[in-house]
Image (cartoon, rainbow, N blue to C red; front, side, top):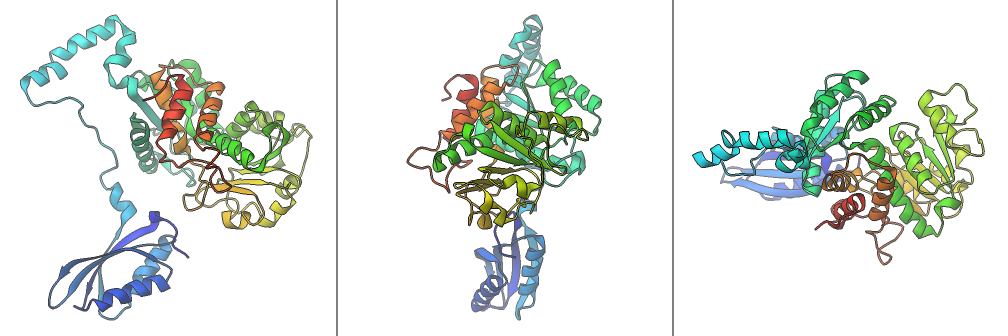
Length: 460
């Protein structure tokens, strides 16, 4: 398998004969085996041996093990140790708590803690609205999961979800200077989750629900929005929807079509698919159909679950039926939030001219983006190794920055539409291209533009 991503990057510490030609042999053998050598460092050199660190990228975990065995088989080379670089950066966790104030003297302690802190506590007691101004609440978000739908890994539980929630918290800090806390709950009971979040809510300015399976996530979000006076945002739904609408806005700019004139097929009727449909309709789309395990969802199908029946009631205005291949005939846009390999590349040829394909299942998309590009005018995916990565990181830091700055108590559809528009317009008319419809997650203007769109205030 060809090396594509640094997520399967390893460093091998090698003991070799004192011949620098051996290092070249190692690099050549790794290249022949499909690895990509990214660094070679001689750690030690003596008259009897070299100690060499070789870092290379593989296609997946099995491929990385194959690369190690190829090197181990070379004469004069001993593989002393192999380090997986992804696991190394997770050792001890990825986030920490630090103090914003000095704690070096008795005076420091008397103001930051007792007795001075008591005055601040009483001030908040007398004026509860000051809690956001005088504590971390005004800049803090709880990232809450039950571990039931983690990435594409499924129901792996709260402990296994923690590295993902840590990563989310790190992204909040990096892109929006928000202090986020991973909250992994040991329950998948809706009532218990709602009550747990309600009980911790006083310490936070917003709640980011994450990796909670559908349809439970819908009820949890709805109930928390009703009971809490701080914004509740399910990123798997609304963050995805924002970025998809932003990318579609620009893809339509490329192909010269209007959202109200096109036919859209969404593959996947879960949390992300439902939110995408809702925002597309709010953004002006008129002909959206959803395909799932049952085929095209249709409002006269009495066998649908309540969540899918609701989705069907709002989509498929012409009551089309059939499989995904039939659904795509004459469509303008495919948006996949389902599973790997459900879309055959040749089916895209039956779509209208100037077709748009968003294959967002991650890490393995609905169709190989390179194959889809043979037929579609614009292709996007959730992967970082292809152009046009649709990534929630473009949305959620700026969304919460804006919500916290505005001291908002809810998230509205109008806010989501403005956020999508803000992301889309970071890409200028001079920059827009079939391979560049969405800005990089590292573009400094994105979180500022989104925050300003949400709060209505300029962000410095």
